[in-house]
Image 1 (cartoon, one colour):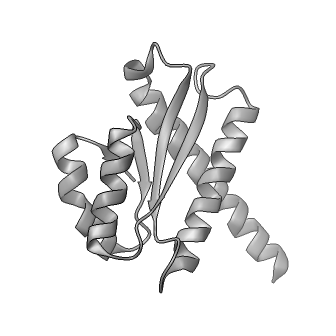
Image 2 (tube, rainbow, N blue to C red):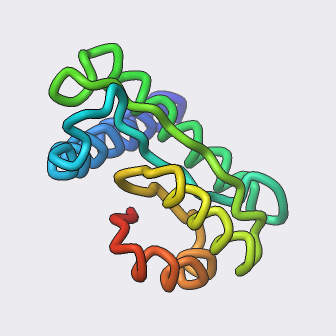
Length: 131
């Protein structure tokens, strides 16, 4: 049982790294003059579904650390900006706005469909890539 959990965890990390690398590879043209590529994470870190948000954040952090340890994306390191969406509709929109204002190239999140739907108008209006 432990080996299966470890195998599934490694698969999740591999998928997250692949997604980050692919999205960032496509988005890198807008980052030509930047020293680091900023990626956002928006998830419920406090509240009823905090366990999902914390696991998602940890996976994103591990993926970023792994990519940076292997030279980043096209030689540029990645910086993960993290926001708590508080598990509320207003919190999701505020978190996404803050990340967009911080000039991230993509947002990882939200961990629940309700939060994703709440944040959608903000990310759609900004043309932000979210996964």
